[in-house]
Image 1 (cartoon, rainbow, N blue to C red):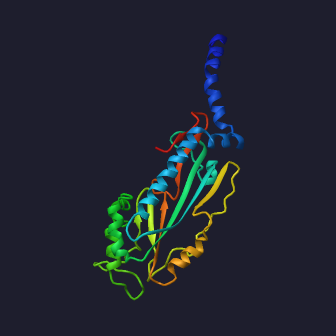
Image 2: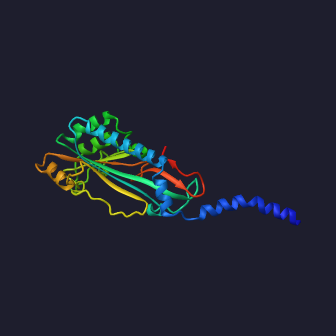
Length: 253
């Protein structure tokens, strides 16, 4: 190889080397805050919030359901803060933005009367993978099954039945079970610190969550329902990401 060929090859490799080096540079907190506050991030954040609000409003509109409380946490941070360490299909992520949202409701209706109404409201396409559980039909079978001596509900084949919920890729709905474990009596905020972005919001803002749930259950005739919002079967809603050494970011489709 002559010197001209070597120099030419070296010069041609520089853009690729520069791109690879830029991917290895750890972005500053200031850079990540700018990404989290960029127009695309804000638009994705607003779209996710509107999706959450629509789902909560749809359940609150079901006859016999009363909305008590909605809590939303918004967190943008480095991927390791979310235990994301391996590169994804688009390369190493520099920033991940997620929301977690839970809404609490009360009803004085029998859950077996309420489940068909919830299904008819079209909040989600209920059913776990394989549709073995997570559907209104399964929940109705569970509530209609006899309890064994150890408290388990048994299927007609004599198998133990998993406690019911309504599950979908975007939401999961739990409710109090009078003869089994109930939901947490005291909703709590996760203690999270972030140098990029973190916020908690509650509606209504001045409500005491524990007191609301205690009051709803006080006479023993009301059930509390908890709706958790998510995406792709995960516990949180990832609505925006940015990666190293590429276009700034992308929103969740």
